[in-house]
Amino acid sequence: MKNSLLIGRLAGIRIFLHWTFLLLLGFLVFAEVRRGSDSGAVLTSVGFVLALFACVVLHELGHSLMARRFGIGTRSITLLPIGGLATLERMPEKPRQELLVALAGPAVNVAIALVLYPFVAPLGAFEGIGLSHGTVGLGFLTALFWVNVMLVVFNAIPAFPMDGGRVLRALLAMRLGRPRATAIAAGLGKLIAVGFVFYGLFNAPFLVLIGIFVYFGAHTENVSVQHRELLRDYTAGHAMLTNYLTLAPTDTMQQAANTLLAGSDQDLLVLDPAGQAVGVLTRPLLMAALRDNRLTTPVQEVMSREFETVEIGDSLTTVYARALRQPNAFFPVLENQQLRGIIDQTNLTEFLTIRAALSH
Image (cartoon, rainbow, N blue to C red; front, side, top):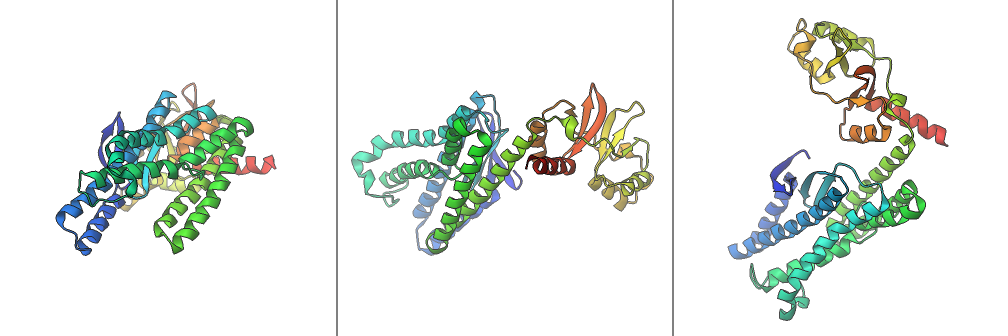
């Protein structure tokens, strides 16, 4: 994730800290100092927040390790002020697998609470959350115990894309199918999100942020799943562009600019004399060369030699998932190592629009 700092790895998964998390810590320190707290109290509060987010990391790690059991990797876990985000390579499409992955996170918090319970229950753990007993004493452990309990309860809310919403979708998908189940779970998630926002406006502003996150998360997931359903029976060969502009490695930047003006392509594929794709000249690379007045520079000195390709028989749902991770997706389509076409974000969107129109 952009604007995030890599702070370590757990089980081979990169852990990132978003810069806004540092703002949270800064605000916490400022609030404690303004309240007149001494340095011990400030350190207690900061230490508690760090312990809380360590529990959040373990929660996300639970999701990730369960997903790994089903052959699904995790690109990263990112800590945000509103919680953690495990970025899986893909979501499980089998309902049982999604159910287990969704339950694995809260199960970690249940385990943490059970570990803490014997230490804090005999000492009055149920009198409330407080840090007045010291940094490593009863107050700290009691608060951490209750926070894990609340994480379980909060994540159980059936507001997609939270864990409870994913559990609901998995259960519904066993009978209704994934697209219909997603639509129902996302609709309920949006309704609950609106409730969060309205309640938060008058009582707890922090809920407004959570409500917005839940609303757009539910909307995005629903759109993604419905799109995948529309693409399910198609391959890259069905959606690829077959009329496109190309360049030779020895063409100049002036020729590349003229070629760009001759069509609507944003990126230009570079082919060697044998017709093999050897590079991509993106619009930003071309513009940078023109600004430097490199009109006579050969394309091969500017083009990017690192680009992804897809096979003509690849499932369009897989191509779509890859395109979502790349805002300016551009994939040469190959068949037996020979170029057959191009897929980019624009023609994928147009193909989806046509399929949606035909499905009604």
